[in-house]
Image 1 (spheres, rainbow, N blue to C red):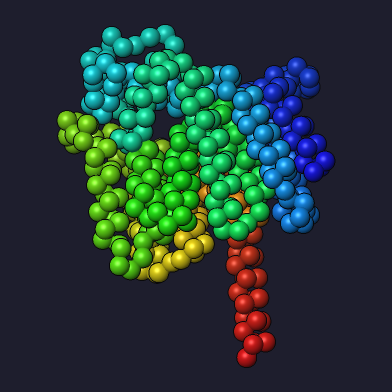
Image 2 (cartoon, one colour):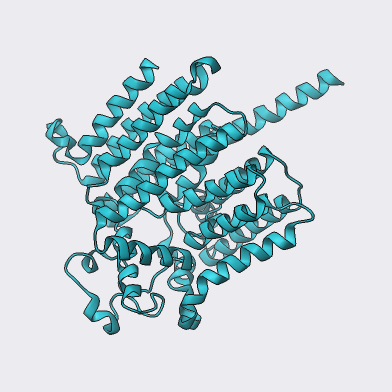
Length: 442
């Protein structure tokens, strides 16, 4: 327990200092904010991976008490609270779009109708939120569930970036509690929560940048817990809410369905999403917002390992066609899982496989905060390949400091080679071990 307390205390000091670290280390004073972040994140990742190793590999069951779990969660919340007051603009300006969309709705305007630059929204512009919005010439990309939350948050917090981030941290803190309950439901030691609670990617992207994953992951994990508690319809509704905030969790529906209840669950899932979209139907064909452009425009491509490799190996390969192929592959994976009957941990295992497939076959962009979606599954299946990837994916931010904003190939290699090699090695070892067991039994 002393090792965990020590690692956590050192991590807390870094989160507290955050981007002011150059005051303590003058050699860092000439670096850009993104470069400082990458250095901090990588160092924090080393502390994090050491903590995960200590808890999962070195501590026997009898030492992983509720006291240890309490210390892990308390420190995790301290990490997050340290970052809430910071301005998120160094890494991402998405938070400003959330506030803008909430403001637009609070003024009685459908957020899908007009981009921020439109003359119809001129009276809503200010000197704080509007200048920081990305893609002012495009309407919003966020689904209906996100829009409803944006409006609720705006009513409660107004234009406060800090308060919006506080809401995301609140939901992320609830995720820690639900994940702990999920571990107990499956008879796993609660201290495994460290895998999610101390992950620097989760902490920075939610507490510092305020990304929607704070809400999305809470809804997704709650759906998994409700399913484990034999409350299937509420679980499906919760998964639909997660999908309506960020579309990716829709893929997980296949893991929740078994023979005999598929039609009822699909109807429940679809009806929940349609109800959320009803207030925005006046936008007509514009209700998809920026999403079609996002999927089709190769300039929106970001940090795609497998897609980048295929585009390099097959010159002239159409970007949009490859995106469609990846989407079809994900649909096929979903259908394969859909046709299986799943019980207990199998549901989480198949959901984990689907999320992993999504990370590899992401059709448009893989921003670092998207990777948060897989981290709750690592609490139950702590895979070294994905644990390392959650650390190295932060290197992708260096694209914005490179000449002409082009992603250097070495970054993709450092990110994806360990991921693919470790995944392949794990798969080979698993099947060789299973084959050896079959021979012994035979």
